[in-house]
Length: 351
Image (cartoon, rainbow, N blue to C red; front, side, top):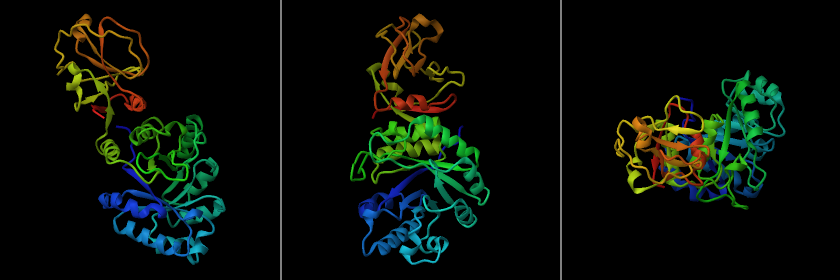
């Protein structure tokens, strides 16, 4: 079993907090982390400090861990002598510090409270110095509201690995699928490739393929169905993959399968499929089509004792008279095919 984030983190915005309360109330007591920025200029008003304090109190009373994004102006704005006093007043679990703070200042904070640095701008050398100063130091990648400005996989992976090697936990954002934050309303992902994809797909990709330690949904809204998929993955290690199956293959829905530990990279082998296959031992040839990425197949009797084995294809393969195509994982779920590691469990579902 590879390490996975314990739960999904949420983002809270004062301008949408009243609408978010109902969803957050349902998740109270989970101990989930919440990202809250205390320096969004469009949220400022005469009663800003009061509203922020009330939101923090409400979240803390429900066992949420508040990760607050702060600036050098935040302390003065709230009338506190220093950040530690501010964190105590607001019930903040961790402080995300970015522009305006020196490495020495951040290291001094880390000795008293968990701190989060900017994953995209902090050098591995500075990260290591800060990590040595406190018990819990993290790095968080930004989210990117404007299309085409999100990070590419190469830079993301390079910076994440360097920071983890320096001793930091690395955090990132996925987009929501409910209310999307304005003014652009096109999602708040860290990776550009995740824009517009279902949250559970992005979560699994960050956790499995890219090895992130903690994941937050950047937008205010995420559907209950997507939350349930992510929760099952975190708690049980079972990855849900929505798929379209032919009538004779519908028995595959809801069955928990294991990818064989010796499966090649270009396909997933359903380890249990031949043991309790409802196809029977004499699967007749049919729909022996080209096996495009995302195809779900079953070996027919042309493969002898392999008849009944089910596979999920990760790279295009040619048609084979011994292999029937019985289903398809379609866009936007295809990326999940890359998130099933050898020896790990998954289940096909109706979307």
